[in-house]
Image (cartoon, rainbow, N blue to C red):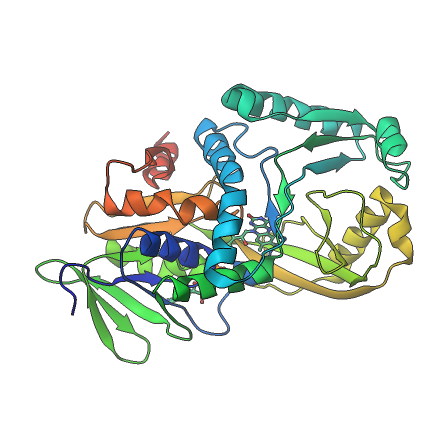
Length: 374
Ligand SMILES: Cc1cc2nc3c(=O)[nH]c(=O)nc-3n(C[C@H](O)[C@H](O)[C@H](O)COP(=O)(O)OP(=O)(O)OC[C@H]3O[C@@H](n4cnc5c(N)ncnc54)[C@H](O)[C@@H]3O)c2cc1C
């Protein structure tokens, strides 16, 4: 065993665990990612691939700033992933739209963006565009669209290629990733450190442990002194056949993957751990796509799926270290694609407690205890 640089287990091999692992590796640590069972919920395999800022943290400045930092860091991060993995995640960050068919909703969103702007100053800009101006700029936009907001920092990646790039990058940076290695329990060990009991009966000892198990974190958290109040929120998505022509826009609900298929999504449902897709929601997604961009009416849908978001009570990330058991960390969030560049860099400083560590107090899970008490 290397006692001066002991291996840090990261529990969970979705985009959050892999990003955190990559950051620790790049900071010179040794890391072993333990990923769970094949039938686990995996938001990282079913997401929309947006690298998105509009509306994020409009009523919570720390999240607005954190997201803005992540957006700024994406281009260099994408290049780093290519260097390490040889995989291009197809980052396209040339701006994105939020389309509206209801004028009151658009006004409300514009007010939210104005608040976000106050938090971020010149690090954020948006534009509100009327339906007629949109149609003049982008022929094909539907008559039912009353307008849109546009922000030039927004973008997207190919989500499955991103997951793969992270996995390969972690290996290339010297990390170990073990798939199908569910951790049954993480218990503080007498005298310090942690014992990880694997579902296959093996026990591993570690000085530190980082819990990044998405929805699976709730089962492991209490033993480490965390509450891990995350819950599933189902999103459903449709994808069309691959199109030769490029869609003239990227929006938070309609986007064209670099490979050509058009993806529609953005639904939210509280359905427990049921990640199946439903006919009425699929019909609604198709209707929305055709309302925004009627030429899509002629395009065939080839696939649909549901996936479970990992949602904290307020929707913001949780970065917590255990006050009961020093050395245990909990990292979980929605928007794990958007935030990945920070998870793969400065979060390592926070875990290592270096002088470069960002102040993440605003994201501690003690904020839920405070809001419950209030
Ligand atoms: C429909 C949908 C659309 C989304 N769109 C976007 C988007 O456009 N942009 C964006 O930034 N984010 C988006 N997200 C959110 C993003 O996908 C998540 O934030 C991110 O994938 C969470 O990653 P994770 O690694 O925490 O969780 P997961 O991907 O759920 O991974 C958790 C991992 O932990 C493992 N695990 C669980 N229990 C254990 C255990 N006991 N031992 C070992 N391993 C364990 C599991 O096997 C799994 O691999 C979307 C999510 C959904 C569902």
